[in-house]
Image (cartoon, rainbow, N blue to C red; front, side, top):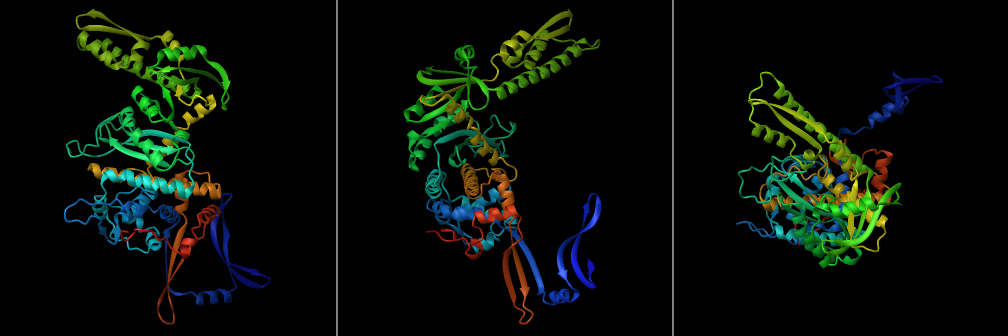
Length: 574
């Protein structure tokens, strides 16, 4: 666009944008007079080539991995048992430790298979940062090197990495949260060589598929994963915890933490008399929950004795006592959670509406003049199948009357008295602990911190970053290695997130952080010298937003442009 000012013509680069619904020219850059513009154009390099790559996310994750010596640590435990394969294999100039690290960074940044890994990596600055050719890193590369790590060595690697993380980053972990989840797979039903993937109650409602379980322990403050365990998909939470608790206790001691200063927070699904006996035998402190359904006497006593007490979130009712539970003295805190109460009431009324609809449908069918003749026993079985839960049977009263041969009349009604009785116990939570000196508020706050581990699992099921899926492996060993790679990816992301919180007061989620860092891009500029024809390569960061620049400086990523990452154990074993 040209403007004339005091008889002189000036040129501007403009873009048409809508302002108040009307197109208006918006000045993007001032270009100067015609002479200045001609001079600038004549100085443009010949055959200019531009290409940019995602830089911020991979650079930040690599800098964390460098501080933890992840590749070098993994390489210590590589011991391939394949025939005609070296014990410490190198493929495409990459060690197994380097390959796992690249896989972990890939899990952080984008949901992709091993086959699609290189397609993603081509759009990043990984090759620039590592000074490595990654063109041949395909699915076969990953599969070959994933074979080289015995599954029994994974806990040893994780222990060393966690020890380095606590020392190198000054982590705090006074309260630890334990929970377990599962991930469905597409492993065939007829595959008998796999023992990990089994059918069970899938938390993503895919009961038709085989699943693999994962248990996780994370810290309260930074959600750092201290321990993970991959287990068979048909095991219940209590049995998994029973098998894992001794290893968790050992992990805490091995990374130099004082076991008496730490408190475990458990979901009620992990509680049992045997499990609590093991925990106390190991000298561990805990906060857990009891089911009011399984402890009716305690629940009734608590409901009768609830007294008002403040706990930081308004006025709530509490009952506290020291009593015998499963043969040992425990401190009990019972209270009514408004959120839980609303949810339970909503769930009951939703269930009743569903059952009423099913019964009404059957009732109308029986009323039809041309309805087929029915067998009373079969009808009763059908009704009992509709009211299959004990709760539904208690709340819905029904009667099946004989009218004539093969003809019956169904009547039903909701027992409102039972609903009112049930509603008196809605929202009741019963917590227990062996931290007898803790205040009521401390016990409740510790239990509600369970959301930290649920948040970690939410990240591991995020469809965009950090997800465990897709995992196209079907042998037990490879599934365990795959899960290990995913947990390493989550650890790198959690530590990177921690750095930004401390250095830049960053408040957004890990998912948002990875998206924002990905937008920090490295531009490669190739120019041909007009005198001798030689190609000159320059690298520079694209223009950033104010927020992106703050993250860039907080992580010191400008240093990686001058001095690139050096990862120990990347192309050679130590």
